[in-house]
Image 1 (cartoon, one colour):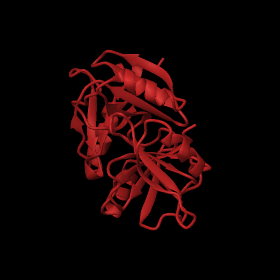
Image 2: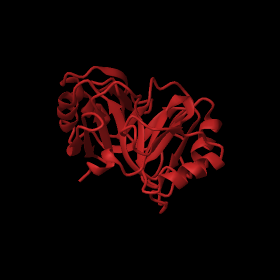
Image 3: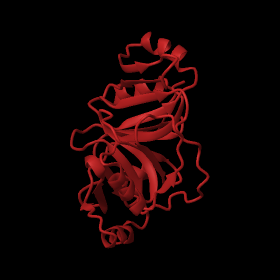
Image 4: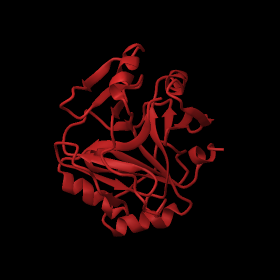
Length: 244
């Protein structure tokens, strides 16, 4: 098993600016430990956590906690997986990283960098309810079989506005979209998107009209986060409807 999902890890330079961006959207700060040896902060919307790392991660990271990581890394090497890095000595914090067939960075840590939160504000951020981490893919079938091998289950699929499939497991949902017309990012849905966008603009945010996850005539928006990371905002449209 790949482990339990911990966070979406993003490079945040400067850290304070990224932290205030998510706080302005209603995310709550999460107390962290002192495991990492560089500045780091975590925010949560009550459903998922975002790790803000003041260093270059090499792209957004899907981060999981995997006990006994050293032994598991040997199992990874027996698969057609090339480790991007492996820190597994006794005098360092154990973590390894690799990329999926779409180039998505996956990081495994042996221990949590923060404790599970107890915030009851599920879905109360300005973004709405977390739907999936969305990624472009050249082959849905390859992405599906790859992540199913890690214990993920297919929970939705459709062919509008382009072919896509959603898999869920270990505390996170991943959406694979057979199109190259967008960058990987978090996708949210809300039944009251219009008022949420008005609130964001009043708070100084600048959501763009439309998103690659919806048909052009559907109400949706894209918010560009720190470092250019997109947040896709849907009004319970086509992608969201395919969940059941």
